[in-house]
Length: 355
Image (cartoon, rainbow, N blue to C red):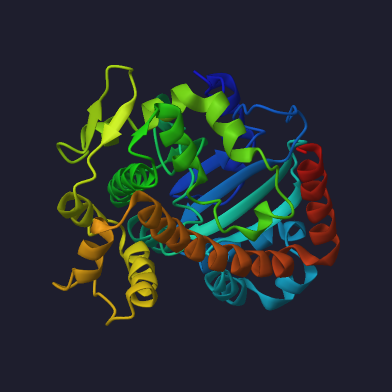
C-alpha cells in the first residue's frame, strides 16, 4: 500500500495538528504526504485542511496563538470578515508558506462542517469533494478508510457521522460519474484516471501553475489505495451497470432509459449544470432535475457516448472553473502579495519540470 507510515501519521498529528485549536476533522494531503510518480517531493510543503464547526471562533483563537500565520491585511480584517471572504471562494480559508514551530513548511485551510457537507453531497464547488484515500485515527487506532477523490490522510473526533455518510454518497457519485465518462469498454485504470481527474477538468491552474502529469502521477502511484477507497462504491453500483468481458475489461450498459435514470441520480449541482447545457443543446425549456420533468435527461440518454461525455464533462468543468478562479482570488488576499508571488513561482516551477 502507498499509505504514509503509521509513525509519520502520529508525528504529523502530535507535532503539527495538535498545536492548533481543536478541529472536528483534520486532513493531510498532497505529494509531500502520499507518494506520486514524478519528481521527488522531499522537502515539499505539507498541506492540511481543518474542518471546524465555527470558523469565526476557530480563527479568533488561532489568531491569538499563531498571529504570524496570517497576512497583515487579514489580521486587520479579523476572523469574521475573513470567514465571509472564504465563502466567496470554495468555503476554505488558507494560510500558506507557514514555517511551523516543528520545523515543517506547511499550508493549512479552514472550512466549516456545513460547507464541506454541502460540497460532498451536492458538488457545489468540487473543491473539497474532489480529493480521495486516507487513514483515520479512532481513539489512537489507525484504520484504513476513504474520503474525497484523491490521496488524503485524516483524523477525526466524535460527531463526524454526518460527514462520513456524506462522503459515502460523494464516493458513489464520483464512481458513477467516472463510468459515465468512460467508453463502452474500458479498464480499471481508465476509471481511476477519470475519477482523479474529476476536480481538475476546467481548473485554470492546470493551464498555468500545475504539473501537467498530476492526475497520471496520482493514479500510477496510488492504484492500490484507490481500489481500497472505492471498493464499497463498486459494490453499490446499480445492478446491470457493468459486465466483465473475457479480456478482463469492463463493458457498461448504454441503454438510453438506464443511462437517463443514472443521470438523474447525480449530485444536484452537477444536474443543474447539465440541465443548463441541455437547454442550450436542445433549445427547449430547461429540465428540472429535482422535479418530474426528466425530458432532457432522457434525451441525453439517447445520444451517442461522445455527446454524453461532452455534456457531463463540460458540466463538471464549469463547476470547477468557477470555484477554482474564486478560490484563487481568495488565496491572493489571504496570502498577501509576497507569499502569493513565492507560492505561484513554486507552482510554475513544478509545471515547467513536468514538460
